[in-house]
Image (cartoon, rainbow, N blue to C red):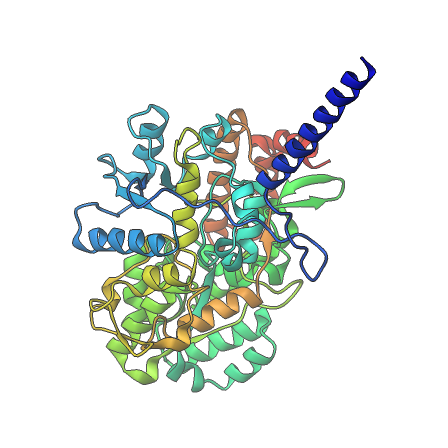
Length: 499
């Protein structure tokens, strides 16, 4: 009996030994530590197969599925991703009829449309609050391409609101004027060396006195383009500031009063376009191109590029634009960029069955080949490949990026031709140099009507003060009315949120 038990135990031990060896052989070999001692990151899982690509639907403003360039763009995206081992079938959807910013959020919420990738130009906040948009944090953290071309304002905005991504330059207004006019001014050098509001005033005054233009400054009905230059110099550094022991909107502070007094002086002395209140963007630009006005602000990058091209076309090469610095005083920066959330951008549908594939498309378009395709356009249509040098064709100005408008990630040294003109590039560099972020507080629905009434009150008083209809002393009256219209109530809410 003892001998039998011993034999049985021996057999069981041998079987256990072989079973253990077998299980070890089926397990993958452990990863080899890197030089830092850490295991290397796992390769991201590939998307689809050649025989079964993953369908990704895409909806974006002004991107029409039947357009010839869009059809070819889709083919090249699919081919480029396939070359990297990711197989997708990208399907561009037609936007519902109507104003995109208004109809798309409604159509998405009601289920009329349900794209995997969707571009919003407003109306996304309540949708995100209802859990209908994917939190992109983990995708961005695990990305290579997207993360590499994100700028500071992108990073801050995504931290605050991780449902919308828009890889584009900050929408900051940059002041520009004709180089031939600027170089003719004795005050120009002093302005560049020390761009105080006083030195800006001196330049505007010299422009007026020499008869260079009728109005040194023009704008498009509001003072926002002027604010981008002068806000920080007077201490208007954020939307919401701490004044004493409470949080208030900067529009009702002494810093704002000082700035409006400066604008009123510009207007009274004939330096600010007397018709600025009634001007629209097109009449503002016309006055600039025709030489009636000498100084405007335009969005860094593409808009400054358009202004420069049209000015050179109209007035010649000597009229190429000069980019001017932000005014210097209490602080120095262009308008503070609201990074509470992106005001526009791409989101991924939380109910999508192809989230990873949708992200893979966005990631590809942020990579080397995607950037070239997105910014330069189609080979042999918008550019030609001349042995690794990309020559832009006469059709290049017709092209625009369908994904990421940023120039980050594009090696412009390989491009024969101007993707952006020198002043446009200078405007982007200036926007980075004089950058300031601004985190706002999103108000609940019951306080929004109060804020709307307060903003209308501000527009009324600020316009009347600038035009001399009311004196600067009326600003104190405005603050009293502002607080009664909702300023006090909203300050209490801000205290709850900000402490």
